[in-house]
Each structure stands twice: as C-alpha cells, then as structure tokens.
Amino acid sequence: MSQTVGPTRVGSIYDLGYRRYEGARLGRAAAIGALAADSFRTTYGIGHGGRAKVAPIVLGVLAILPAVIVVGVLTIAARIGAREPFESAVPLGYDTYYRTISVLIALFCAAQAPELFARDQRHGVLALYFARALRRSDYALARLAGFGIALLVLLLVPMVILLIGRVLLSTDVAGAFADDLPTLPAVVAQALVIAGVFGGLAMAVSAFTPRRAYATAGIIALFVLPGIIAQIVIGLGSGGIGTWLVLLSPTLILDGTGAFLFGKELPGQLFFFDLPTWTFLASAVVVTAVAVGLVVRRFARIAV
Amino acid sequence: MGWARYPCPVSLVAVTNLTKRYGGAITALDALTVEIEPGIVGLVGSNGAGKSTLLKILLGLIEPTSGSATVFDLDVATHGIAIRELVGYMPEHDCLPPDVSATDVVSHLARISGLPRTAARERTAEVLRHVGLYEERYRSIGGYSTGMRQRVKLAQALVHDPRLLLLDEPTNGLDPAGRDEMLELIRRTGTEFGIAVIVASHLLGEIERVCDHLVAIEGGKLLRSAPLGSFTERTGTLAVEVEDGRDALAERLTAAGLQTMIDGSAVLIDLRDERPYDLVRDIVAELGLPLVRIEQRRHRLEDLFRDGPEPATEIAAPPTAGPR
Image (cartoon, each protein chain N blue to C red):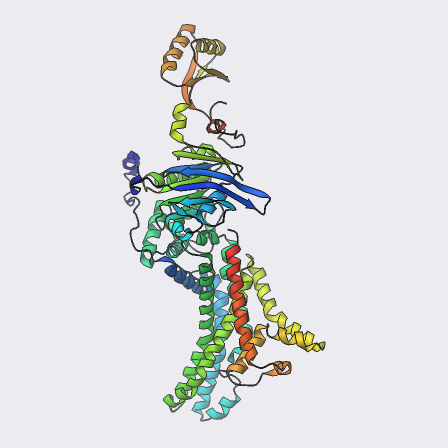
C-alpha cells in the first residue's frame, strides 16, 4: 500500500511501523503460571493502587502480630531468666495459633477472594482470558492456585516468626530447632487444610457472583452459619444431623484437624459432638475437592 | 498488499450449516454456510443478526448447536487452543478492569498469550503506541474515555501478533472523529500489518470504508457474501442535478437508452460504462439546462443485499447514502 510513505508520516519519527513477533511462545503452562502469579499479586493488592492494599495489609499484619508479640514477650522473659514459666503461660503455640486468628483468616478470605473471581466477571475480563490459548479450567485452577499460595504465605509467615523466635532465644539453638522440627509437618498440614477449606469455599462463593459485596457476605455466611446451625440442631436433641453439619463448618474443621494433627483432644464445644478427630481431616479434603470442582464447573459453563 | 504471509491459498474461515440456538427459543445462527478468505472482511447485519455469536463460535467461546466451523483449516470443536493462539479478539462490550493501567492489563494479557515477560513488555509498548496511546497508558483505565478504552481493547487483541483479528463492533460508543480513527487503525492493521481482519458491525456506511469483502447476515442466515470492489464497479450511479428541466432531461436520457431515476432535483443514471458522460453533456447543452452538479454516486450498500436471496430492509445504512 502506497499510503505508508505519504507526507503525513514525516513527523512521526517514533513510528517504526508494525513489527511481527517472531520470539518464543511459551504455551499453556506459562500462561497458567502467569495467571497464578497475577492472582497472588492481586490478592495482596500489588499493582492495584493504594486502596486495594488496605484490607490485605491490615489483615495480614493483624494475623502476624500475635506471633511477634509472643516472641517479644518470650525475649523479655528470657532476659529476666523466666522463660519457662512464661512459655507455659502464653496461650499461643504451633497448635493453637490458627484457632486464635481464625476470624482474621476468614475475613481475609471474605475480603480478597472476590478480588479475583467477582472482579473478572464484573468487568467482563473473562472474555479476554477465554479468547486466549488456555482452557477454561486452566483459568479456574490458576486463580485458585494463586489464591491458595497467597493464603499459605499469610498462614506460614507467623509460624516462621514463632519458630525463629523460639530457636534463637534458646541457649542451645540446634537443640531447640531439633525439638520443634517434628511439629513442623503438622503445622504445614494444618496450613494446607485451612488454605484448602477457607480459600476453596471463599473462591467457590465468589465464582458465582460478579458483585463483590454479595460474595463477601456469602463467604462470611458460609463460614459462620453451619456451626451455628449445628449447635441449634444439637440443642434440639437430634444429634445425628447436627453432628454432620459440624463437618461442614470451616472453623470447626480447623479445630478438629488441629486436634488430629497435633494429637490433642477436641477442644471446647467440639468435645460434645463425639466424632473421631480424623473425620475432620477427611471432611477438609472433601470440602476442598468439592469447592475446587464447583469453581471449575462454574467457569466451564459461564457465558462470556 | 499484506498477504505475503499466506504463500498458498488458505481458508481463513469456513462455516458449514452452523446453527446456534439459545435455550431452544432463540435462534442466533440458522444453518449458516459461508467461506471467508484473508483480507479485511466486514460482517454486517442488524443487532441480533448473529454476528457476535458467529465470532464467539469461531473462538470456541461458545459451542454451536449443530454444524461445523474451521479457522485456518482447524476445527473449532477440537482445536480451540491452537486457533486462539492465532487469533486476537476484541469483544463488543467493556472488558477492561478499571483499577489498572493500560500497560499493566495489556502486558498481563500478553503473558497469558504465552509471551515471555520481557517480550510482553516490549510488545505492549509497541501496540499501545500503534493504537495511539502514549503517556496516558500508565494511568488507570477507570479514567479513560470510551475512545481510549476501545484502543486498549484493540491493543490487547494485537499484542500477541495474531494472524487473524476478530473485532466486534469496534466503533461502538465512539464520536465521529473517534470512529474515523478506529476505522483507520483497522485499515492499517489489515493492510500494513498484514493481519486478516473480520470486523462485525451494524453500520454499513462505516464498514464499507475499510473492508474489501462483505458478509451480510440477517436472522442468523447468510444474505450475501461478496467482494466490495466487484459490487461498486457493477452498480455505479451518476447523479445529474439541474435547477429546472429535470423531467425533460430524464426523458431525453431514457430515450437515448439509459436507465434513469428521479431523486429530488437530480436525475440518476445507471453507470455501466463511459457513454452516459458524453450524452449528459450533449443533452444538457442542447436543452440549455442550468446545471448544478454532476457526481458519481455509489448505490446504498443496502442494495447489495437487496440483490441477494432475501431483502435486508432492516440493515442500517448511513443517512447520507445515495438513491433508492
């Protein structure tokens, strides 16, 4: 076409013309990785302006704060030579930490999961993703993985602080590390269970609505209601159904798997439900699988 | 021309008996069969004619109820990913998150298309410059005008260097100047960049300015598929406007064997060869008529479809177009 060299082009010295892209195309796996990384960043508001960072940073700091306080208290106690009595008095250890911050974890999920799925639906971005060289299930799984990893970071950072604090405070560093080492698999397993159950359910809810507010309300309801209903049903005396509802409550699953993984008795109210502790772990696996399945199915069918 | 990328004839898009029903009640596509070759192809039809549905089926975004379609000889039912690697898509509706910048969203989508990080960044800068976004590309999309958003949508469709662009109503919501710029961008994409383009629009008057082939559909059926050039050659019209003596002029021209029509103060002459020019000159001089202007007009593009299997009266045409 001859118009390309007309006089109108004289001034545009920056316009080198359209260039073909002959470089590498990394394919689906790279696309999934990039999408998961984007999900991680979006969960923490990275690259999304100041307002998007407020909720994740506030909740994240609050989730880490107890670990920092515990380490601080232990440091002071160690200075005055009273570490042992303080340590047994502090109610926060590897096995109880997540129970203590469970509300923060739930709020983090309720606030940030809709940032991914609800946002993509609301602004019609799905059409741009699905028009690219990846499957709809790739999209769903990449978003889930990114959010799951973000949650794991939130859950494991305080544990790492606890571990480092405890180890460095002891006179025998290697010995203290060796003492704590056997507990770590249970800690990681507990974090995985929480990421799966809390994260999975939150993502499943937000996959079904483009409205952030509805998603957040729905997630909180899903976290809170099963436990309440279970207690009401049990209060009414029909133990059977109530017992099973317990296995659907994220916070009670957290308590139950904690008891199983750390070899403790079921805490507090759960004691009355009289379930073997392993059922909570099994329930966690089932709930996570169902949540992931729902998300994948949702995006396989959604119209764009 | 830019078709050097297609050394041997390649079927760009082939659609056979394609039917799409929504919920059994609405038929978006009704046994559509059409073949589209590389070039800038206008897909025209009124709203609800099935244009968007066709584009989405070609991308594998929705499944047809029956029938088959291929893009680059790849079956959409089985090779969706391979097709989408070669295709860029600009949806009709808003599809951009408001809280990120154009650079962020386009480079992110480039990476989803499989480009490495550095390449994604470079291509993003390039295509945003091509569509005419400069400093503003670092600002949040939430503050963009419709014209800027449409440019970003085009840029994300181009960023992975596709071989085919599917554009769904790219001039939607743009003011006249914005429309001109968008059409010019589409024309450049098709000619200079050498990328095949299928552009869906309900505005014939716009689409005829950039396309070299037109596919018209109505009610999910093919009305006509024809090269724009062949059509305009065949049906040119000469309009002769006179201050008075219009009827006498028409009479003389008809007597001389020309097909004429009256349109306001003008006489319209079917222009099949050069002969009418001399005749008009002679007759106007002979009758001493006060001549206002002689101009060559193109038929309404609507007429292209009137010649087809079914009339297409609902298709919109520019109000300034020529005679009926």
